[in-house]
Length: 81
Image 1 (cartoon, one colour):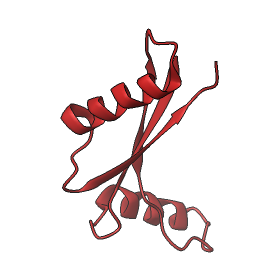
Image 2 (cartoon, one colour):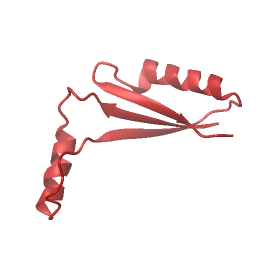
Image 3 (cartoon, one colour):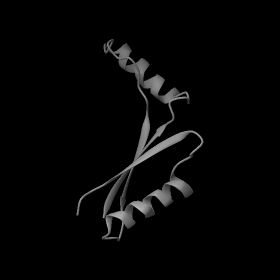
Image 4 (cartoon, one colour):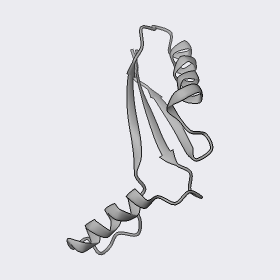
């Protein structure tokens, strides 16, 4: 089963990479840009047929290793079988 984990900084955390991207885009003419937040996408392919179990395993992976819960949020999308 394929899952997509989207990880982003919490709103209260400064995002210097996002700011650098924003500044670069503005410097090449995209002046209507309000802000940019940069994040990560992790694609998982689990040997699991049960969507609920796959989601449970992916959440465990996020909580134990993939996500720094102090500064990051995450969401998980499960691709239909």
